[in-house]
Length: 325
Image (cartoon, rainbow, N blue to C red):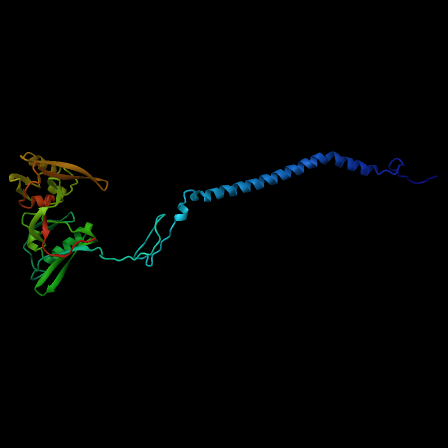
């Protein structure tokens, strides 16, 4: 007789063996679960600690300036017209309001010649002049207009124009392209005919151009062993017999170098002459220095030799505006 299938759990003791086994397995795994939970908690704490450490470091960096109190002395500054005045202030500057008054503007150097009856008539002057270190040659047939054009083409840091005062009064007007005292026009009569004097640009008065202790120095030269006239770019450099403390010294700038001139003057009694080296804008510059044993020596020029060297300088005859900071 088929009585069907019979399922018996718990060995007929009503015990849920499957549940008991599952729970026993869970109990045995409990330490592992606790360790896994602890590992997760530690990882979370480590992340939070890292974030806290980064923020503390950032706070420490931000507070570094507080140690000496300089951050509490910071000031700001503003200008009501920044196109004209730009201001800045350092830590600890006293607070206040300041009014800027411009009492003097920088001014470029401007000079003029004497008056001429016409600007297109031959001047009858011949020779070379130096303006801003640039040699400009003038022939007898050149007019005031020609001289103006030659100066403008020379790149001498100056601009020239003709001022028509009247129908019979025309003047050469020369203005420096650089404002301020550093832009003062440097004009040299590098000839023996006193050309700039004849134009009425310079006067016959001479003075030491570069005074030094007990003596005088020349302009700067790029070379001390090449003929001075050649270094200056002159095609017909002047020559003459100058006097130093009353003693004659023959100098020919077309042939004599700065060193030759120093040697000739140094041979005189009561005076010494040397060529000194000076750095200038990354280049080497040479200057002739003449020093008297008993103080500044007397210097007398001939043929504008010392003027061309820049030892002596002529005065300005017609100054329109002085160079001014």
